Length: 200
Image (cartoon, rainbow, N blue to C red; front, side):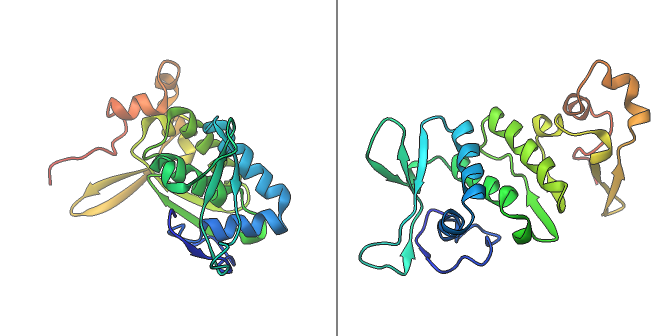
C-alpha cells in the first residue's frame, strides 16, 4: 500500500490494497461523495490528517503514490510517514465505504484491528456494520474491544474439536444474565463461551 502503483489499476480495490492510491484517485475523480466520506473517516482517527494528495507522478504519469497533507503545514508526506495502523485504517475505510456497486458479494478480513488505536477500532466496527447492510462481511478477530461492538447473534466462535474447526453461533438467551454486568469481550476473556486455545 505504501509503494508506487499503476494509475489505471483502479477497477476495484485489490485484496492486498496494493492499488490503494490508484483506487482513491479514481474515487476522488468519479465518486466525490464516497471520497469525501473516506477522507472524513480518516480525519476522525488521524486528527493531523488534512487530505490525500493524489496525482500521477510528474516524471512517470502512469504511476501514483499515496501522499497526504498535514493540517498545519503545506508540506506533503508519503504513506511511509503514516504508522502501519493508520495505513491499515485508510485501506479498511476505503474497502467498507466504497460505492455499493464496487463492493464484492463477500468481504473477508482477517484481524483488521491490528495496529489500530482503540478509537479507530470503534470506527472500524461502525464501518463493518454499515457495509454489512449491503454485502456479507466476515471478520476474524482476537480483539475483545472489537467484539464489544457487536451483538451475540453476530458472532461465531471457532473452536478446535477432534482436529477440525467447529463454529458455534452465540445464543443471546444463554448470555442474558451475563450481559447485564459484562460486555461480550469481557465474557470472552473470562472464557465463558470458548474460542480460546486448548490442548490437542
